[in-house]
Length: 407
Image 1: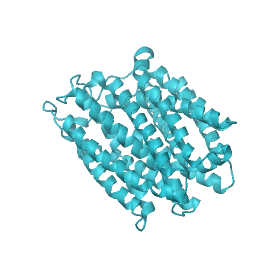
Image 2: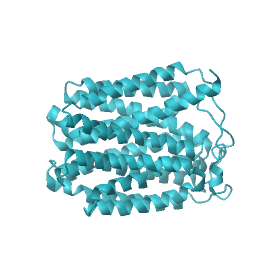
Image 3: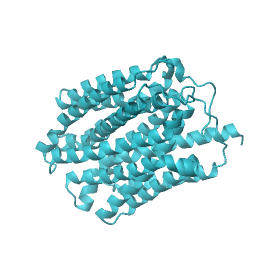
Image 4: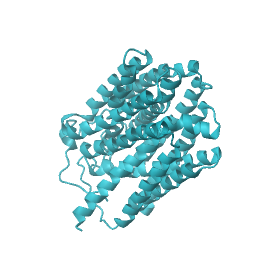
């Protein structure tokens, strides 16, 4: 097999890994009512699982830059996939609540490592097309997750079966990575990322702004994805099937939006995309909060609005901060996103209380507040990253000079 063919296969495996990153996130919120029944936990203890996962994710993201420098990105990636496999096995066979929570910690550590290594590499080697497609595959997993669990629950099948399927797929991907480890590294192809100098006049302030942006955005995305099913079923009297479809629509919005962005990659500047995304998210969050007709559809609109935020921020990082800072900066950004998810999980658990209809009915209002904070952070980031006077801001800068391959 030629090097180009091996590289294409590796890119396919990379996309598949991102499907596997999205599946547990999509499964967890929908399966939570059944999981908590199995272990006899209150609804608010979803915060314990989210916290354990995000603490592990925080550890993985913070250490990923150093691991890539010492062991190389390939070994760091294989280690991350191995950890996610171990976490999923823990979910599958957990005999007690504490084992389930520890498994969430391990799964998070693996996911954080994989997420950081792949995002940094794609930011350096590719333009928007591959980046948006990469995150679209995350959305594929997150979309399939609620649908898979909904089908299993309606068929009176245990939630563990869903995690058993993930174990089989994850083990296959790890085997594929090991088999393809001999692919030689590619040269840096991303024209903006190849510049070592930051474009922002205040790189330190720009980094701080992006950390805040990732923190608020991921807290908002995860919170809506994890709590909406409980809001719809226990507060708004949706059936399990209808709520599952609505939550799947949220993740499907992320997926479809990113696929579309992968097609129109050079026609839309990331900066313009971010402004439109935040404005649309605010309108959709108010729609969901007000419980207007078709408010379940508001989740799909939120997903579409959120589609381009994460990949666009990663893409802009080499431009704002310079290539030499990218690997560690992406790790710090994803770590900040973990911190946001942890804080949000505790805050929303307090708002939800014991899971009664009154407590859960307050969560859509909390979602609106989070989106407003996201908009404020966007404004701050635009101010902090000004000064890109030596690099053009037109969309042509994202066009790769020639086809690149993953290392």
